[in-house]
Length: 201
Ligand code: NAP
Image (tube, rainbow, N blue to C red; front, side, top):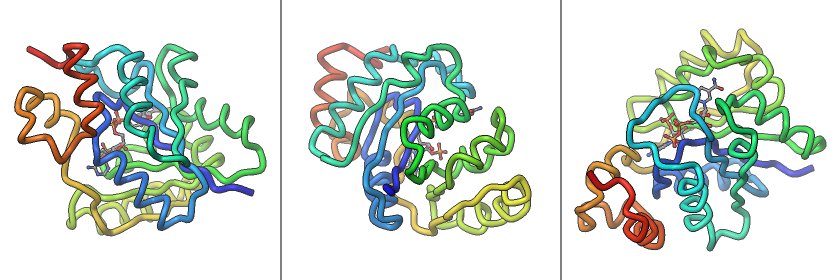
């Protein structure tokens, strides 16, 4: 039986916070592999500067190319429509029936999980792993788990160390200032963004 981490995201673009989130969970949970799954249409966002799913998929592939246990899946992109996590986990459980799935999330998404479509299916198919954005988050996440998610059948591992303070929004807003974002994004992903003229105003 393998332990597989799943990181769903808009990845607009993927950055080092996402990779550190994966590295951290892989080590703490002893995961065998991690699958990054870029959304087709995110159910919860309508970013006006959302680049195409093909660009977001390509950037994910570039970002993980040197990690042998990290894969990128186009399962949501091929499915099209809104990328509901319960459907993705149902599909993955059919592909990996004997493995344990860990759905890895940051703080913001964790705090909305009970409002997602069919949360009971999500909690049935996967254990949730939540990593905070800052040192203040742990108590908030833990009480959300105890009060809202556990009563719905969720099992969650909540970590108390933030990985890196960075967001895709910050990267997009500073795309012309490489000195500012150099430590936050993979060099090859940045070159892909530049070559394809993404996120320019
Ligand atoms: P995103 O912005 O690309 O981020 C992907 C994940 O990485 C998020 O969980 C995010 O945490 C986390 N993250 C990013 N930077 C981080 C940092 N510096 N430290 C720690 N964590 C960090 O993705 P997203 O647009 O939020 O979407 C997340 C997933 O949730 C997608 O697969 C989406 O389809 C799914 N979703 C599903 C439903 C539904 O099924 N109804 C509804 C909403 C979302 P944060 O949570 O803190 O942003």
